[in-house]
Length: 193
Image 1 (cartoon, rainbow, N blue to C red):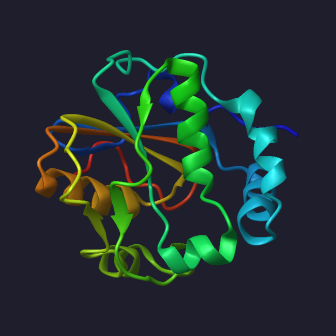
Image 2: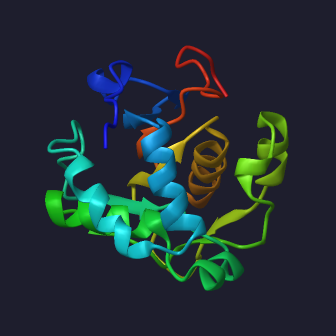
């Protein structure tokens, strides 16, 4: 399987500025082989194939060597988690947490309402779809620095909705990392969302 490294993200984490003080970086382009693998994992319930992603995880993550940083996977709604049986972003966060000795928080950040599948929507529909969809559990302490973890970065709508919610909860710095970046639909790193 040939998965292409994203040369723009080789200078990670400077690509994909979400907002002042926030950025998101991806490691590989979401090429056809990657798409087939991710879709088989997410939509055909072949979660045993997650292990095939392990060799593609980064060996280093610049600026993430801070013991106070918390890795937070992009959450699924309870219904989507029940249907799928797992959250691939949680798996990625757990693997990165082990590799870089960072805390992973999987329970405090939740998707509080069901939304349409982002993959079926246009960019503007994606943004509308996620308004007020995420929330930090107020009973849990709020970390100062968070790195959001997801599998695929397409338009930035999910990362932006999560980032906005986390800032409202009191997080001071939000970063993002995804394994793959779509080759179409990706916002230019020079534009603000």
